[in-house]
Image 1 (cartoon, rainbow, N blue to C red):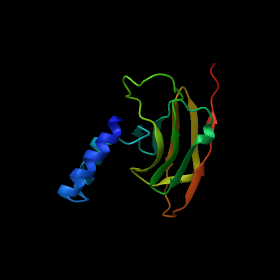
Image 2: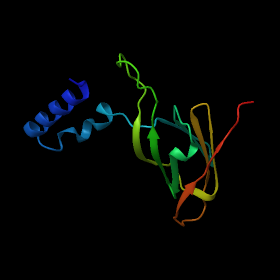
Image 3: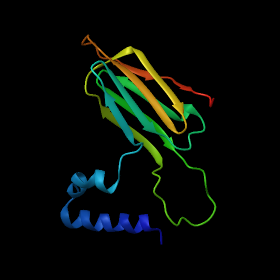
Image 4: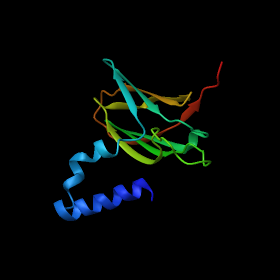
Length: 144
């Protein structure tokens, strides 16, 4: 039997016993967020580095910036269907993740690039209070 199915069945039994909201506080522990992200802040800039292994086409990820939030949508799919999984630590699957930014950012000055399994998103501090959701285009950097 699939171990994830067993865990799902176990969770359903726990939900029945403790109530539907029991797992809300444990969600990040049981199911870590994907994609993983590192965020670095300076006085006027934010650099987000997003882990995207196996990305074959940069159109597989959608990045949106809205005032003080970053939204990532897509699918991490490591294409390997042969054999039985012995160990699986690289998180994959469909994701829709929204991350709060430490300050509002400019919609007109966003740069996103992809290289070696990582998406680099550079954002710049916004001085005005205007809010607007903007799609970010990702450029592929060629190996040198």
